[in-house]
Image (cartoon, rainbow, N blue to C red):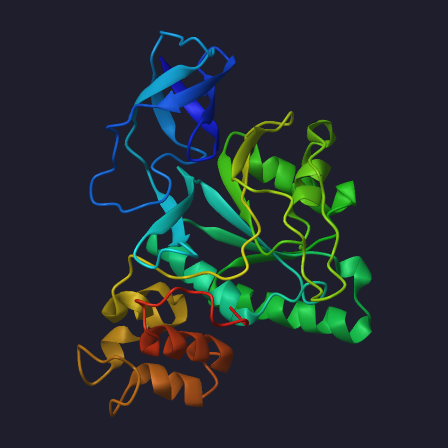
Length: 314
């Protein structure tokens, strides 16, 4: 019987079957995903085949995983050579960011976008908590929204607790399977509750010590919205380690760089120190934002074998 994984803890799974019933499942030990070294072989959003047999504890067994249309991963925080699958079969990702309480740094946004681009997942950036900003902060949020919109990403300024502010999301999500992500404390659970109040997800407080959010979601979980569609609520992410991307391909996942790659003098230009580089010329001319190039430079020069937790700004 076919089903959708609603929640994966790495040891047990909650699966919605085709008839709408929800069952607890274990995974058959021999299941491994070819070519992937992951801490979680099955993720929220996966399509799976579930056996009819029920064990003594009332659990069924996931016998196989259906082919994914896509997935998005990040580097495991503890195992540098492994990765964690955040979500699978994603029609669109929504990245929730805030400019204070907590601060979402631009490098984090850029890293998320690069990863989403590499897996062909369109992304919308939601600038949340605009009700908390003073005039200067609101102007800064608008400037960031304009910057990313100019690059080619959909951006919105929202107040997650106001229904009118997020009505467009209900319409966009209907009939789709989407993912919501961002730091802890940016208002992901509040947003999901706003889209469907019947879910009543637990929302967190902001730590006074570091002005960071306290984790309220431990594992990614997919919820069916009463208005239609599924939304995958991911755990709060402090840092986003890029994995599965060769350095020579990173520039392909910056849209504003990608359109200039064939203008460089050398076909294998890394856009670092090479002469007559179209990308660097565009940065100097103000056609590519300096902050975006800084993230690119960091990705190209960092040691990808290290556990990704060092950069507090990403």
